Structures are given as structure tokens and as C-alpha cells.
Amino acid sequence: MARPQRIPRPTVKRLSLYLRELEDLAEHQHETISSKRLGAALGLTDAQVRKDLAYFGQFGHPGVGYRVPELIGQLRKILGTDRNWNAAVVGAGNVGRAIIAYQRFRRKGFDVVAVFDDDPAIIDREIAGHRVRSMSDLARLVRELDIKIGVLTVPAAVAQEVTDRLIAAGVRGILNFAPVRLDVHDAVAVASVDFSVALEQLAFQISLGVTGSLDEKGEE
Image (cartoon, rainbow, N blue to C red; front, side, top):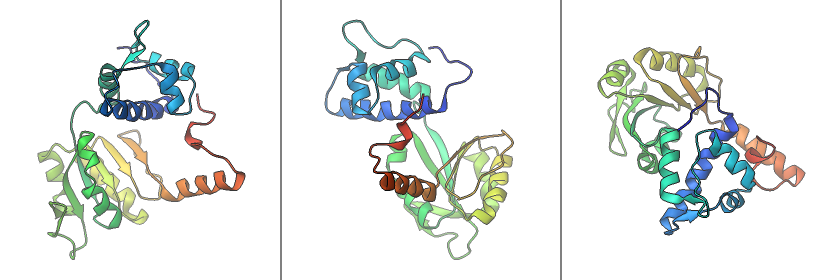
């Protein structure tokens, strides 16, 4: 499987969309799909689908299209979700609790194995089967539990400090829900989820009468 040095970010985002659509097809016992049908399901052209997948190799079969189970396996391998990743949630507030209880993460290969907070009123409480641990335990448990991903659901004022501690402990990637840009000096991978930005984009679409997904428009 080819893996070039740089993959366009919109392509990587679309890979997740392809995988989600293919998994739905597999649940409904579909064995094959064409690039045209896969693209149409997501509001994309068949040429865009083929271009995205061509970055990683040739997965289609003449006269058949794509074999759904096979392409699911390839996309999971490309995205790194063909194996389990241990994750820690830092911040046991409302957002953190929702993430801890979200069972779909485990089905996607992400296991929340530790939860941390610095609030004495929360420490040692149990949330969705996890005992909330003190921040003083973070470095030790990251190493002991082989935690590779930190899910950050803390206030913006402390997000950078917590990020620095996660990096120092050996975390490789951070899913950031804090409304602040993190400085990681290319030490780890960061994906940020900003609810306010998403709502602003939605308001923009509504105000202009734009329908469909803004993320997929005009991207190559």
C-alpha cells in the first residue's frame, strides 16, 4: 500500500466519511460498491473518490468496483483504527463525562483506560465504570497503562499546562475540546474540536441559505 509523504488534509477527512459509509453498507449486507455510488452517498464525484483512494494504492476491481469488506479493512489500516489505542480523559466535567460514557469510541478501537481531574470533590468518584484519578497520578498511569491519546476537556486557562504534562508523560496524540490553540512544537499530533466554531459555521450556512456539508465543499 503506497503511503506518500504528505496527504492533503481534506483527503484524510474524507477517508473517515468513506469508512463510515462502507461500515453502514456492510451492516446491510452489501458486498460491493462503485466509486460513483460511494461518492453520490457523500455528495462527492466518483473522480474525487478515486483520487483520494489512489494516494494509498489501487483498491478497485475491474467490473466489480470496490469490495466493501476489503476496502473497510484497508481504510482501517490507513487510518490506524485496525488496532486498539489506550486513551485518557483529562477533565471530568460535563463534556468529559459524555466522552467517558460514549461506547462508540471502544467500537472504533479507542479505549478510555483512565480519567483525571484536579477537583477534590470529583477525585475518587466513579464515572461510567472509571474511577477519577488525581492529576498527580497522570505521569505514572500514562506509562503503566501505555496511554497514547489524551482527550482534553479542561478549561482554556489550564489547557496548555495539562498538554505539557501529557506530552512529558509520553502521550502521542491529543484530542482537544478546550477552546484554545495548543502549542505542542510538533511533539505530538493534535485534533481540536471547537463547538463554537462549528456553530458559527452552521449559522453562516443558514444565513446564506447554503445546504449540505460545508466541510466537503470546495476541497481537493
